[in-house]
Image (tube, rainbow, N blue to C red; front, side):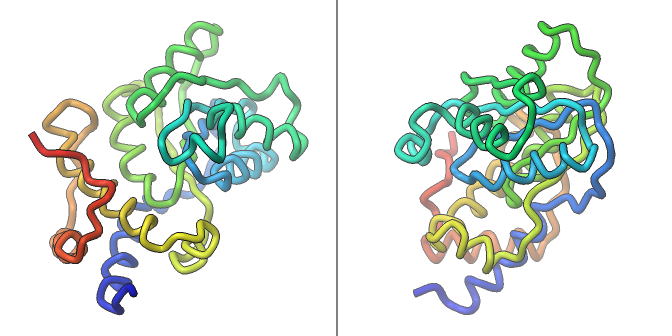
Length: 217
């Protein structure tokens, strides 16, 4: 049973993780692989609205996705895009990345190999990964403008779509921990975290939402 306090803290962190950018046309839309097929749907929607002429889906597999996406996250995302009517020549895949840093670096490498000039990236992720993806891209691909996007829905609806409320809150907490830890390790730029968000994070950790925390060294 998840307490009312825990839900309120999760809502606060959920909102913080989102960058609240207004979508605008970019050189490429990059869909970051995950367990959430909604990322592919949102990427396709933005493509169909004329926000990018090209899609790159990036991602291998992880313990979370191995069973539901055995051919790899990017491959399953591409199959979804084709089912939704995107021409095959407008969808590239990067199938080796196993974390957000590799998503960005390997996508950058792929686009450079294909000779495409990229000035801006429409970065599509899970809602609670927007800020982390932004900070990572600013570090690893500093020459491009970054516009974040995700499926627009409130936390209760997202939890219902995933079907595992505890996993979602664990993910929210884990994503915030990485925002705190990774800048000093060179993985992303530092972004300020408001004190109320930090307090909510601490309370959720104390209540045991720690399954997605990375070990601190």
